[in-house]
Image 1 (spheres, rainbow, N blue to C red):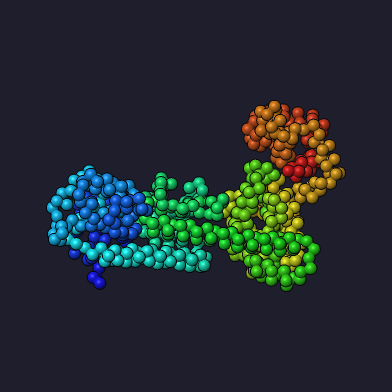
Image 2 (cartoon, rainbow, N blue to C red):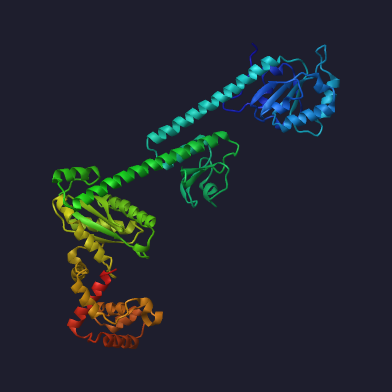
Length: 538
């Protein structure tokens, strides 16, 4: 069998590459027409001698022929070539030799007339070719290309399977994708924010300036019905099947990584919640068992433990938030609190108490004081977190079980702190909230309610109602400020942006409504207690 030259197995088989085969080069091929389309991919090679061939094609076929019918009439040949082109054929190869085996000038002239005005590749052979050998060699190329594609697909599959098994993050998957396709790649979310990228041979400015860039090479990322982003290769050739294949596998790998990470986080969170809730209530656990379970969830052994609570607040009322929005805030604070504990040189477990309230236990060891550890921890949290929050802490204890039993105290303190208009500490204990803490503890007591409502009777509580909506200060706001400032009218005027005579006039109106003198110490104490109760209702 004659030898043949094969193109690189990673390159597609084209009309041009088939013309380079030894089996056809010996017949002295000449491109009669369509030279600009010789790089069209060839899917298969057929020998055909009838005019009915176009109706049998599926696209991408190279047709070989020696039939005399295609060399007799320029009109019939033109019609045949036109139908071949319309059927998606890659090209047409025909022998133009006479009975003696010599090139036929007459046949060449007919074909030249037939292809005039067409752009379809037509190649004439000046001597006879063994078409069987041509098809055998061509099919070896095609099968080799298919095998190369299968092997390339297998390699791509192996690469991304290995990344998935290794738990690779999104950035490593993006880096690998860019390396495989040799082009910049971007992972973006549903609103086109760039989550990860690799520039490959381009520059960051070329890739990211003016993002998002339009691209035909992209895949969506996420489960069906829950798509959350896209993986994009904006500079990759739209016809590059390899790039499409790599992007598809990379998108699947990122989806799997996200699912695994989410599942792992959900399981860890569920286990932590279960332990914290068990510690808060009556439990049959021993101290050793509690410590073993907590250690498995990230709370290291410590000499003392401190119960803490974080109440999540926001510009809008928590009760009016969508559930998903509040859950996202809680998840963010959970993550940030664990990270802040690590920064502070300690460890913590954090669970959910109820909507908008997280509870946890911080372990403290070493020579540092507990207050120093908690101050560092919650300052880190305040600096890193974008979610407004209030922090309450219980007393330090040597037992993890005892710390869990005191978590409710931390919850009460965090709730009290959330009502405070002025805060100067990163965390508070009951001793820090003083009278406010006592009032908050009694806020559901019917006697406290009756006392406070009696003291504040007739005052405007809602600032929207104050002065017909013209003032941002309600009566309760003004009374609280007056009590906090110790009656200092100059400081009050500066805080409210009013003149001193206006402040004096409003104070006099307030005294008339209250029916008591604000200069009387007992009246001020009673009113302050009532205001604290009213604030605690929020």
